[in-house]
Image (cartoon, rainbow, N blue to C red; front, side):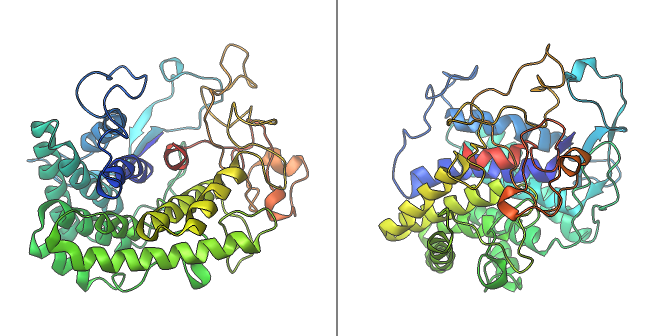
Length: 400
C-alpha cells in the first residue's frame, strides 16, 4: 500500500536534514546535485530533494482537485483490497487496489510537507515550489473546515489502518511549516493558540520518542528551530531550548541503558512496533542538540544510537541489511522476498528493520516462541514476522 501519513514524515525527514545543513552548518554542498547515484543526478537540484520529490508527487496526487466534492482534502491511503503474498512485484498482482477516504490527518500531512517543499525547492524549481505552496495552503484551509475526519483503526483489510483520532499535533505541524515558509501572521496565531505550543514530547512518561507518524508536532518545532528569518528568532530560540531539553533526556537514557542507546521503555515497560525508528529518530534529536550547543555528549549519544542498530544490542544483530557481522537478511517486504521466493532478491545494503516489538502480533513470531520475551529480545529475522521485521519508508528515512 501507499500511505500519506507515512510519506509525510518520511519526506519531511529528508528535506529537514537538507535544511539543517544549510541553517546550522552553512554547508551548501552537503546534499548537492551529483552527490548520489540516482537517475536525476545532474539536473541542478540537490539529490536529496530529488528523492523527496518522488513521494511529494504522490502526496500531491492524493489531494482532491478543485471543483470536486471534498476539494482540497487528501485521501488517507491506497492499497489492495486483500493482503497480497510475499514475493510479488506490483505488476504481477491481480488484486484490485482501492483509494481510501480522505482524512484530516492526511490533509495536514500534505499541508506541512508541501509548505516545507515550497521554501526548499524555490531556488531550483520555482514552478514546483509555487505548486507546492498552493497545495499546502489549500489543504490547510480544507482541514480547518473539516477538523474531525478521522482515519479509522478498523480499516485494515489489505493494508495498514494508520488510524489517528487526535490531529492537534498535525494542525500544529502544518501551521509551523506554513509560518516558516510564508511568515504570515495567521499561521503564527494558530501555532501559539495550540495547546502543544508550550510543551514538547520527549520528557516524563513520553521519553520514547519525539516524533512518529502519529505524533508530529515535534517536526514543526524542529523546522522553526532552523528558521532563517530574523522575524522568527523568538520562536527559533524557544524551540531550540525545548529541543535541547529533550536531547538532555535522551543523553541520560544512554547512560542508563546497558547497551547504551537513546531509548526508554516508557510507562508500559515495552518496546513498540518499529522500535528501531524510535532509536534513530532520537539520535537525530541528539544531533540537533549538538548543533545548538556544541556539547560533545549529545554527539556521542547520537552515535550510540547507530551502534545499537548496527549490532551492539541484546540480539547481537545488525538490524541493517548488508552491515555488521550478523546483518539483517530476511525482512518482511513484498519485493525483497528471497526467503519466500528464490526469484526475488535479498534486501540491498542499507535497509533498516523495525526491530524488537513486545507486542509480537504476527503468527510466525508467536510460533517461534517469542511470546513473553524480554523487550530487547522480541525479534526474529524472518520474512513472515511482519510485527518485528517489517520495513517502512518512515523508519528508513531517519537512517538515511
